Image: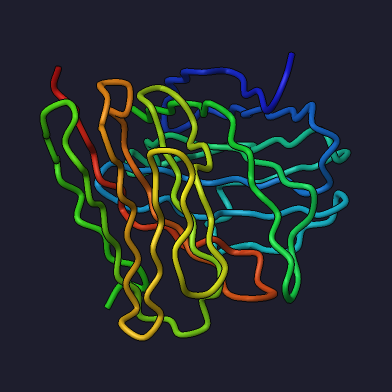
Length: 117
Length: 111
């Protein structure tokens, strides 16, 4: 496997289910991200992890719970979701999270298409 | 007002045409300006990025940033059907870790 992989690629879940999305990066990066991409809306950052520590939570509802056990793996645990949570969930990784005068390219996975019924 | 505005299109042009894609922004703190390309059922991939103002060229692609007008552009010369995708602009303030994206413009190049 190369780059950033995500599983599953498609997920349909009921509002009372609990499921998890998985992301793995094979690039040796230290930072990982979760994004939400909804139809007709800009890509929205949800969470940022740097060296396994969460460094950003973009006011995400608690029904989304991230977990980063190591720099290569990132999970998004889902429970009691709403139909409006249906979207493409993208994972990304980068060498670092940047600083003044520093830019790190983010590499995206193919996403998990989530449908909440 | 949204931090980044991008016309979602769709935009349809004939093969070989010059394509111009644009974004405007409101946050003066943005210093890095990026263009991502996203094919159907794939994640976004970085096409080009520019630091501060000016032009950057890479093959058939040219990125322009005008910080005085808070306006960025991506030009595609000699467009090909393989350029058909959604193009996303994104911006980053210096020292920040949160990319702010435009809505994306869906582009179709017709053979």
